[in-house]
Length: 218
Image 1: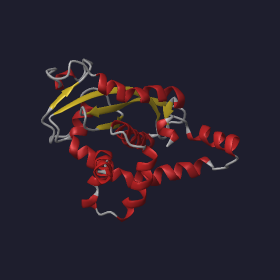
Image 2: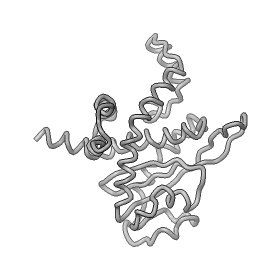
Image 3: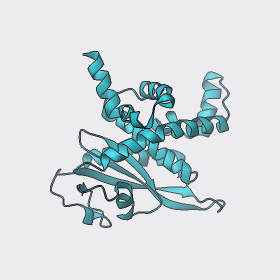
Protein backbone atom coordinates (compact mmCIF):
# COMPACT_ATOMS: atom_id res chain seq x y z
CA UNK A 1 0.00 0.00 0.00
CA UNK A 2 2.93 2.36 0.68
CA UNK A 3 3.74 2.31 -3.02
CA UNK A 4 0.51 4.13 -3.84
CA UNK A 5 -0.33 6.04 -0.65
CA UNK A 6 3.18 7.16 0.33
CA UNK A 7 4.60 7.01 -3.23
CA UNK A 8 7.54 4.84 -2.20
CA UNK A 9 9.10 2.84 -5.07
CA UNK A 10 9.32 -0.89 -4.40
CA UNK A 11 13.11 -0.98 -4.42
CA UNK A 12 13.19 1.77 -1.77
CA UNK A 13 10.52 0.00 0.25
CA UNK A 14 12.60 -3.19 0.12
CA UNK A 15 15.58 -1.30 1.58
CA UNK A 16 13.43 0.34 4.28
CA UNK A 17 11.99 -3.00 5.42
CA UNK A 18 15.45 -4.50 5.65
CA UNK A 19 16.97 -1.55 7.50
CA UNK A 20 14.12 -0.70 9.87
CA UNK A 21 12.55 -4.10 10.54
CA UNK A 22 15.09 -6.69 9.50
CA UNK A 23 12.63 -8.09 6.97
CA UNK A 24 13.99 -9.33 3.65
CA UNK A 25 11.41 -9.27 0.85
CA UNK A 26 12.81 -9.35 -2.70
CA UNK A 27 11.50 -6.69 -5.04
CA UNK A 28 10.24 -9.30 -7.53
CA UNK A 29 8.10 -10.79 -4.74
CA UNK A 30 6.56 -7.38 -4.07
CA UNK A 31 5.91 -6.93 -7.80
CA UNK A 32 4.15 -10.29 -7.87
CA UNK A 33 1.95 -9.29 -4.93
CA UNK A 34 0.97 -6.05 -6.66
CA UNK A 35 0.18 -7.87 -9.90
CA UNK A 36 -1.91 -10.55 -8.19
CA UNK A 37 -3.84 -7.96 -6.19
CA UNK A 38 -4.48 -5.88 -9.32
CA UNK A 39 -5.76 -8.96 -11.17
CA UNK A 40 -8.46 -9.33 -8.52
CA UNK A 41 -9.24 -5.65 -8.02
CA UNK A 42 -9.64 -4.82 -11.71
CA UNK A 43 -13.24 -6.05 -11.52
CA UNK A 44 -13.95 -3.45 -8.83
CA UNK A 45 -12.30 -0.75 -10.95
CA UNK A 46 -14.43 -1.66 -13.96
CA UNK A 47 -17.59 -1.61 -11.85
CA UNK A 48 -16.68 1.90 -10.72
CA UNK A 49 -15.99 2.93 -14.32
CA UNK A 50 -19.40 1.61 -15.42
CA UNK A 51 -21.13 3.68 -12.72
CA UNK A 52 -19.08 6.73 -13.66
CA UNK A 53 -20.40 6.60 -17.23
CA UNK A 54 -23.95 7.01 -15.94
CA UNK A 55 -23.22 10.24 -14.08
CA UNK A 56 -24.56 13.54 -15.32
CA UNK A 57 -21.66 15.66 -14.14
CA UNK A 58 -17.94 14.99 -13.67
CA UNK A 59 -14.90 17.07 -12.88
CA UNK A 60 -11.75 16.03 -14.75
CA UNK A 61 -8.06 16.85 -14.53
CA UNK A 62 -4.78 15.33 -15.70
CA UNK A 63 -1.07 15.36 -14.87
CA UNK A 64 1.81 14.24 -17.09
CA UNK A 65 4.14 11.39 -16.14
CA UNK A 66 6.99 9.72 -18.02
CA UNK A 67 6.91 6.00 -18.81
CA UNK A 68 9.49 3.62 -20.24
CA UNK A 69 8.76 2.30 -23.72
CA UNK A 70 8.80 -1.44 -24.14
CA UNK A 71 11.60 -2.50 -26.45
CA UNK A 72 13.28 0.92 -26.30
CA UNK A 73 15.93 0.60 -23.61
CA UNK A 74 16.33 3.73 -21.54
CA UNK A 75 13.86 5.76 -23.58
CA UNK A 76 10.82 7.31 -21.99
CA UNK A 77 7.71 8.98 -23.34
CA UNK A 78 5.10 11.26 -21.87
CA UNK A 79 1.87 9.74 -20.62
CA UNK A 80 -0.94 11.14 -18.50
CA UNK A 81 -2.80 10.21 -15.35
CA UNK A 82 -6.35 11.48 -15.56
CA UNK A 83 -8.80 11.73 -12.69
CA UNK A 84 -12.60 11.89 -12.85
CA UNK A 85 -14.58 12.95 -9.80
CA UNK A 86 -18.23 13.31 -8.86
CA UNK A 87 -18.57 15.66 -5.87
CA UNK A 88 -19.64 13.63 -2.81
CA UNK A 89 -19.63 10.55 -5.01
CA UNK A 90 -16.65 8.74 -6.47
CA UNK A 91 -13.17 9.34 -7.87
CA UNK A 92 -11.48 7.30 -10.60
CA UNK A 93 -8.01 7.53 -12.15
CA UNK A 94 -7.08 6.61 -15.72
CA UNK A 95 -3.62 6.12 -17.21
CA UNK A 96 -3.28 7.02 -20.87
CA UNK A 97 -0.45 7.42 -23.35
CA UNK A 98 -2.48 10.04 -25.18
CA UNK A 99 -3.47 13.51 -24.07
CA UNK A 100 -6.15 15.93 -25.24
CA UNK A 101 -9.82 14.99 -25.42
CA UNK A 102 -9.22 11.50 -26.82
CA UNK A 103 -8.41 10.01 -23.40
CA UNK A 104 -11.64 10.94 -21.57
CA UNK A 105 -13.70 10.19 -24.65
CA UNK A 106 -12.27 6.67 -24.83
CA UNK A 107 -12.53 6.13 -21.07
CA UNK A 108 -16.12 7.32 -20.69
CA UNK A 109 -17.32 5.90 -23.98
CA UNK A 110 -20.59 6.65 -25.79
CA UNK A 111 -22.58 5.81 -22.64
CA UNK A 112 -21.62 9.12 -21.01
CA UNK A 113 -23.99 11.97 -21.88
CA UNK A 114 -23.24 14.32 -19.02
CA UNK A 115 -21.09 17.40 -18.52
CA UNK A 116 -17.34 17.41 -17.96
CA UNK A 117 -15.89 20.34 -16.07
CA UNK A 118 -12.17 20.96 -16.35
CA UNK A 119 -9.65 23.63 -15.45
CA UNK A 120 -9.72 25.28 -18.86
CA UNK A 121 -6.94 23.31 -20.58
CA UNK A 122 -7.62 24.15 -24.22
CA UNK A 123 -7.31 20.61 -25.58
CA UNK A 124 -10.50 19.36 -23.95
CA UNK A 125 -12.58 22.40 -22.93
CA UNK A 126 -14.89 21.56 -25.78
CA UNK A 127 -16.22 18.80 -23.56
CA UNK A 128 -17.24 21.19 -20.81
CA UNK A 129 -19.99 23.75 -20.59
CA UNK A 130 -18.71 25.35 -17.37
CA UNK A 131 -22.16 25.81 -15.82
CA UNK A 132 -21.75 23.88 -12.58
CA UNK A 133 -19.12 24.17 -9.82
CA UNK A 134 -17.36 27.52 -9.71
CA UNK A 135 -13.97 25.79 -9.62
CA UNK A 136 -12.31 22.38 -9.95
CA UNK A 137 -10.60 22.35 -6.55
CA UNK A 138 -12.03 18.94 -5.66
CA UNK A 139 -10.55 17.13 -8.64
CA UNK A 140 -7.30 19.10 -8.45
CA UNK A 141 -6.89 18.03 -4.83
CA UNK A 142 -7.56 14.42 -5.83
CA UNK A 143 -4.82 14.38 -8.46
CA UNK A 144 -2.24 16.32 -6.44
CA UNK A 145 -0.78 13.20 -4.73
CA UNK A 146 0.04 11.78 -8.18
CA UNK A 147 1.97 14.88 -9.12
CA UNK A 148 3.85 14.76 -5.81
CA UNK A 149 4.45 11.04 -6.15
CA UNK A 150 6.03 11.53 -9.54
CA UNK A 151 8.87 13.36 -7.85
CA UNK A 152 9.66 10.18 -5.92
CA UNK A 153 9.38 7.53 -8.61
CA UNK A 154 10.22 9.81 -11.60
CA UNK A 155 8.63 7.51 -14.21
CA UNK A 156 6.35 4.51 -14.71
CA UNK A 157 8.17 1.32 -15.64
CA UNK A 158 5.89 0.20 -18.48
CA UNK A 159 2.31 0.29 -19.74
CA UNK A 160 0.98 -2.41 -17.41
CA UNK A 161 2.45 -0.60 -14.41
CA UNK A 162 0.66 2.58 -15.48
CA UNK A 163 -2.69 0.82 -15.57
CA UNK A 164 -2.07 -0.77 -12.18
CA UNK A 165 -1.13 2.62 -10.74
CA UNK A 166 -4.43 4.08 -11.95
CA UNK A 167 -6.29 1.19 -10.33
CA UNK A 168 -4.63 1.55 -6.93
CA UNK A 169 -4.75 5.34 -6.98
CA UNK A 170 -8.48 5.01 -7.64
CA UNK A 171 -9.08 2.74 -4.67
CA UNK A 172 -6.86 4.69 -2.27
CA UNK A 173 -8.41 8.05 -3.22
CA UNK A 174 -11.91 6.59 -2.97
CA UNK A 175 -11.16 5.26 0.50
CA UNK A 176 -10.05 8.73 1.56
CA UNK A 177 -13.14 10.29 -0.02
CA UNK A 178 -15.44 7.97 1.94
CA UNK A 179 -13.50 8.12 5.19
CA UNK A 180 -12.47 4.46 5.36
CA UNK A 181 -9.17 2.86 6.27
CA UNK A 182 -7.58 1.67 2.99
CA UNK A 183 -5.71 -1.17 4.69
CA UNK A 184 -8.90 -2.45 6.32
CA UNK A 185 -10.74 -2.11 3.02
CA UNK A 186 -8.12 -3.97 0.99
CA UNK A 187 -7.74 -6.74 3.56
CA UNK A 188 -11.48 -7.41 3.53
CA UNK A 189 -11.99 -7.06 -0.22
CA UNK A 190 -8.99 -9.17 -1.24
CA UNK A 191 -10.17 -11.88 1.15
CA UNK A 192 -13.71 -12.04 -0.24
CA UNK A 193 -13.26 -11.17 -3.90
CA UNK A 194 -11.89 -14.54 -5.07
CA UNK A 195 -15.19 -16.27 -4.24
CA UNK A 196 -17.42 -13.51 -5.63
CA UNK A 197 -19.33 -13.89 -8.90
CA UNK A 198 -19.23 -11.23 -11.62
CA UNK A 199 -22.70 -10.09 -10.60
CA UNK A 200 -21.56 -9.55 -7.00
CA UNK A 201 -18.82 -6.96 -7.57
CA UNK A 202 -20.67 -3.70 -6.86
CA UNK A 203 -20.65 -4.12 -3.04
CA UNK A 204 -16.84 -4.14 -3.17
CA UNK A 205 -16.49 -0.57 -4.46
CA UNK A 206 -15.27 1.80 -1.71
CA UNK A 207 -18.52 3.79 -1.84
CA UNK A 208 -20.70 0.70 -1.37
CA UNK A 209 -18.30 -0.85 1.16
CA UNK A 210 -18.33 2.30 3.29
CA UNK A 211 -22.13 2.50 3.13
CA UNK A 212 -22.45 -1.13 4.23
CA UNK A 213 -20.14 -0.49 7.18
CA UNK A 214 -22.14 2.53 8.27
CA UNK A 215 -25.40 0.62 8.02
CA UNK A 216 -24.05 -2.31 10.03
CA UNK A 217 -22.96 0.06 12.79
CA UNK A 218 -26.47 1.51 13.17
